[in-house]
Length: 183
Image (cartoon, rainbow, N blue to C red; front, side):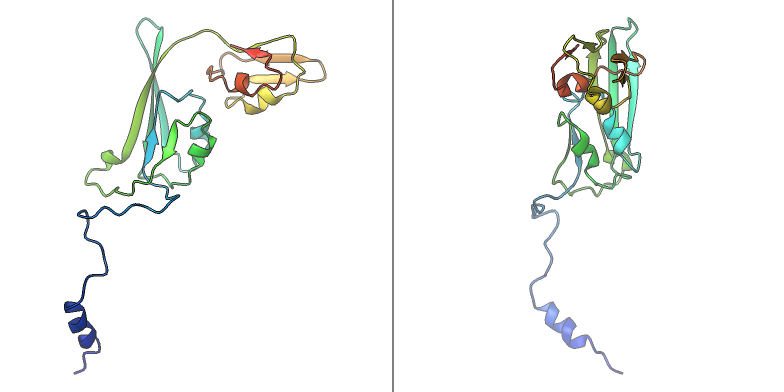
């Protein structure tokens, strides 16, 4: 009977291991590694772009309004069990509320530990973007609106805002080249 790997097994018994003991030694991730997601709800404008670009639909939003109707509680949850770590949500987040860290320690016993969430408390405002006289109807505001709340008719020089769709994120105001949109 032959044992082709016996020599190799005996040699490995007396050599150092080729792996790093875990979790005794914390090895840093390579630069650019996309690991566990970090979410800062205070930076979030609730534009909804992250939800639109998330192909596995691992981002969910629940909104709760206070009894007096003046305050919104917007809870955004990120399910790391279905996330593909493509970084598209971070790329589309203009405010930097979403960031993929270099944390690769995601071995857990309870899947609920892989759900990252945060709640933004926002006073409900009823101020919507308004167009000023300097508008050249360039349609950029309509193009950057994540919810399609703005329509611009260049031929008739008309600008219209659908207040039902507008989440008051302010992206249109910040991207206006003539600075004629105000909240």
